[in-house]
Image (cartoon, rainbow, N blue to C red; front, side, top):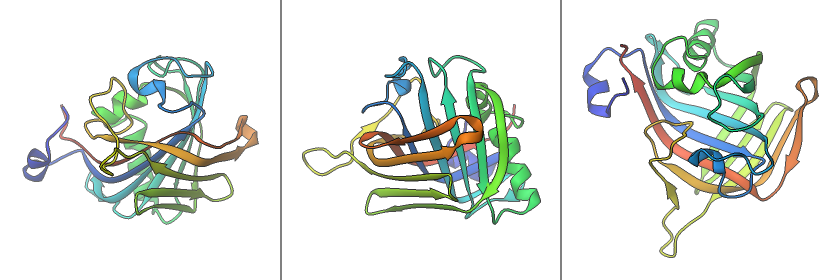
Length: 216
């Protein structure tokens, strides 16, 4: 079961993760995947980048680290076991921290992350890389070695408040609101996996999230 913040603070949890999300893809704005529709181009090329301000997985502290999935989605985002993923884990992670994050995000530990992992059909690679993940003044930047580079900023309302997406049928941060954004730059260079692209002015998502799971 997914948990509230209050429950997580009083229960021994399988994982409890909080931080920021940066995500960008090949779709126009707003990405149809979040409402369960087919990608604009019929397929979707994306990255989903998590930074953990604080958190534990199976008692292992992963605070301060980052994880990035580079993803090819061949059709509707909700089709089980359809995604292809190349996973990058922060080069600063110990072997124990790396394994904890891989176990959580590959679905082995259950909960909302297992629901998300059920969409993945093939993990192409898991490798360490230098990951620079930052949100400053509402604008997000991501650099993953020589493989991923992105810049994005959220849309705002007439009063300057950030445009927020809630209660969507699909989410990479279950239970947390997403901030609708646009990526001025979204470039990936992974030719060995057929993942090479460079987009400007297309969909992006940012979020402050908390994901916790206490077991079945």
